[in-house]
Image 1 (cartoon, rainbow, N blue to C red):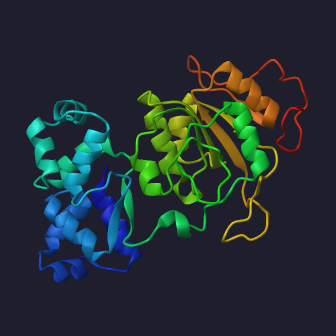
Image 2: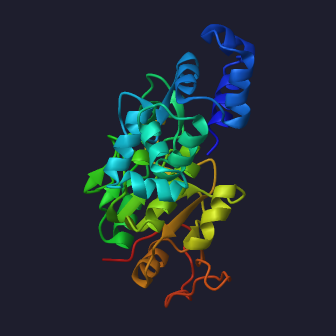
Length: 315
């Protein structure tokens, strides 16, 4: 994790110079430069810079300070300082200093790589999922197809108040969705698309940690990203033949077609999920990598011609 590069990107996006930040905080120019370029400096300096830029932490447990939030994240996972120190490659005393806000930024990065790999910045005071232009609602008939494929949906980590996803448990903003553990057997995740990569990484982390058994992600079909290349080998992927239609929302009062192609990425799919997914959607179905090879998935009904639109089997 490179927190310094995140700070630099936010500073440049706001049109601020290194000198502007140094002057406001009454610190040396080199202190700000070393924070951005080398992840050097203290957590105290980092937090002062964050506050000047009007940013808040997203993707980590709640708390009064960053150290307290790091501790809350560790306790939520039921991990000890010893287990975190081994995973992060630091001593237990370093973990203790991070949790008490007395650590170096480099040490903080090592710990957050383990506890909050999807952490990022948002603007202070903004409820992101209520204002995101890239949040789209899947229509009820599509959600019925998802329910047919998974048989039940235990968790929706990207829930919206007007969504029709019948999940047993839901997280209603990106902060919870990226920071809470996804402990569930079946998960449907339709993230705001500007956060798609972060939710892909979160889903993959939870699946690898065996917190999540089967995760279905509805995503834009962007295959050139590093995140996609890193995760795709562990997933079964469906590329839809046609663009999907999305349900009316606050920013789109009428049904509208997506301005891009879409795909389903499924982590932890068993044969039953694969068969039902092909029945519901068709399209181009690519199997996860096995023994270093990828292949077109050939379920028992692969010979059926694929419909232009996603469909459900007749009841």
